[in-house]
Image (cartoon, rainbow over all chains, first blue to last red; front, side, top):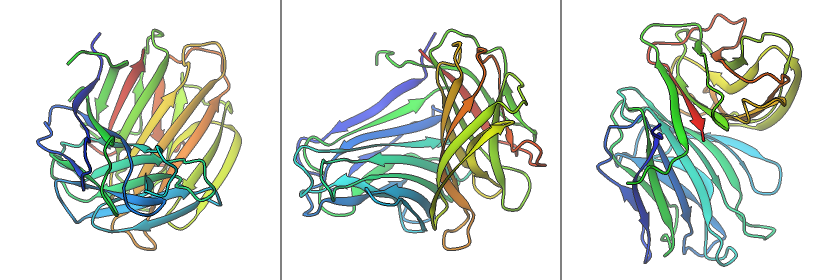
Length: 171
Length: 174
């Protein structure tokens, strides 16, 4: 019996990069899954991440639930990207720690508004390190998603950062 | 590309007309776990409703749950026992598609069944007063029967109806 998950593309950085982009995403799947392991060279313990689809800087609305070792919190915002709290460990986070996460995008090629659901985590064995966040986003655009980019809020992604983009069948 | 994935599509439904529920029946017992991905809307305006799940048509008080939720202003957690259905999403409404991913563990075994969901339901334009939440539910179905059918519906007892285009896909995990 055929399985449903297909690797569309992957990228592993061998040098720093400001962002990672997957372009020309085919429409032949039902859903998309983006998974990552990453770190930034910015001089802080963590920064947020930013996902844009189709290069768009508009129509994103986010609600997040996040925790950083104290009471969990929630907020909502409408900025020019899918906002990912605590997603990216920075240069002052414990060495060799990378943040991980997954964004699920159902019905990415349909002609309705899109929803993005992300669970991003990072832990670095410190009292003031990053954290974890569950974030939902409504992208109020009916266009099919053909590209996805990830950018840290500050600094560059370091060598060893990796991204995997999967498509789920059936289309 | 080699086929190394362990996820298999068992069935998928996309509504071509409105419906009060979506049901997957005759689920084979050949997988380790099940996963359901739901994306959809309600037809009715308003604040929306929770998204519920039942197994094997069991409407008895055999479900319990604990959840953590962020509604854009605060994080909350609560639990409920002896419920007549499980919950898998905090809110589904009629303006933006809602998402729920549900993992049903050891569904064909002889112990009680745990199912875990992650949902995203985001309002129209952000800012205060908009509907929406992100929620993770853990539910328990206190039955030793193998799960052979799954039904997804707006909260049972509500008048909610799924809109055209609402989609649910059932995966088996090898």
